[in-house]
Length: 208
Image 1: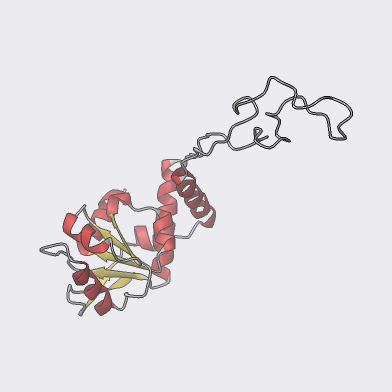
Image 2 (image 1 turned 180 degrees about the horizontal axis):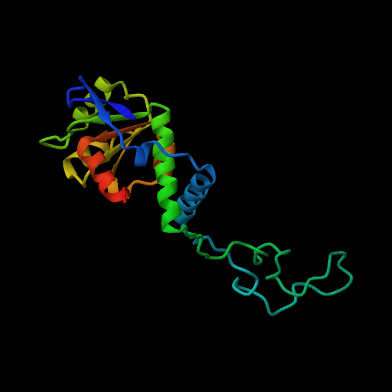
């Protein structure tokens, strides 16, 4: 399977071979679902908390007498039924993290790559680097590639400070090193743009 290869100036330079081990495999939809679910769960902080009736201030004295008021009887102003009382069955701090076996995570990632390749949504740029961090330079590259209005995931071989700072102010663009790639980011993107070195690094990490 091949993808279009572009130069840094946006000119088309032929095709780049995409390894079948990563881009030509069956798509396992259930593993994709589990991988995305795991990713989103692990983003949750789980620190929402409210006070129950034992934690709010007050209590001790009966709010009003038992009979003769015409109101429902109450034994404490900390009851969830009273204004200012505790909340019944409210959220408590909890850990939402879930796990997925390493082999299943890898299959899900390869499934996401294969799906993008089957949709012709993978492009390769031979090199991508800037002498200084400039959002304008990155925006110009995307414009030449016809990706300025598409949600794009840029896969690079290693962390590059100038490139990262050039990408971060573009709302439709996310950059990620190849070894940190995940199925959620791939499925969320409309187009996957890889540097040639990023593609090589991805092979080193995923092809066993």
